[in-house]
Length: 152
Image (spheres, rainbow, N blue to C red):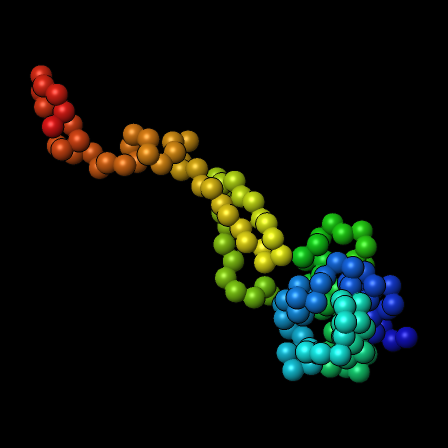
């Protein structure tokens, strides 16, 4: 077996970690040609990944095995079942992430569902939550009480 082909163990690990829908997302991120992604002819994720392995072995994309395994490990970096990509190629050769990246600080988040919907609850600087003093009203004459009397 050539170095550029996915092994049986790698196919089985990918099939157990990625459903067909999530596998298509992984392949898109790894820049696998969309025209080569099968639309039919498989009944489950194992059969899907076998078809992908056949495409990789036929050379559908340069360095396909490494790119797929690199992307799989990017998604599941601490996986004990997804093999690491071949070490003989520098990591700087990996494709950049698709889409903009953003750093969110000072927040709490939860990621749920197969679609990876993410909700972040942001805590403003200073620890005050929205609705507390200093966040609803602009300081000014209308927000300050008149001298010696009740607020306007």
